[in-house]
Length: 199
Image (cartoon, rainbow, N blue to C red):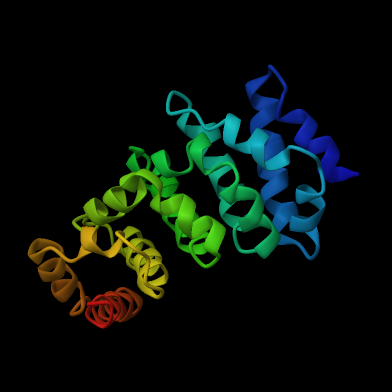
């Protein structure tokens, strides 16, 4: 079917073919049943992660948009948790703003499931990147980052919350609680509440 054909194109040596396949795939995964069709193709998520390349920000942006859409689905989160080490976390350090936003959305969705939660915690790098992004000046980025941290802190995990409980981070979250962006303010407030509850 379409999904199999598009996943096949991701291995193309032609950059344009690869990018067009990703654009079509994003439309497909947003359509009814599209996510499941892509996930049913063996190795599809792994292939999407393999083409994440800081040297090619345009292709990476399209790939991470597809991955973000797949992360909305429980089956997609399960597949993504298995390939976290292939670089989804490192996307939080990208110079491309949309890539960072999609990566924060992916992480926020991944931590909804225990497997993804443990992967995100491994090594602490993802959490450190999210923490650093609390000082970003882009409203949309802050919304996704505080949303991810809200999901992350909603359940207590050994060792993880300490990275967010320092006075500097807590002060920043208190500032964001007064954000003009309603969602950011709500998420920051929830993170603070969750951190207090875990003490």
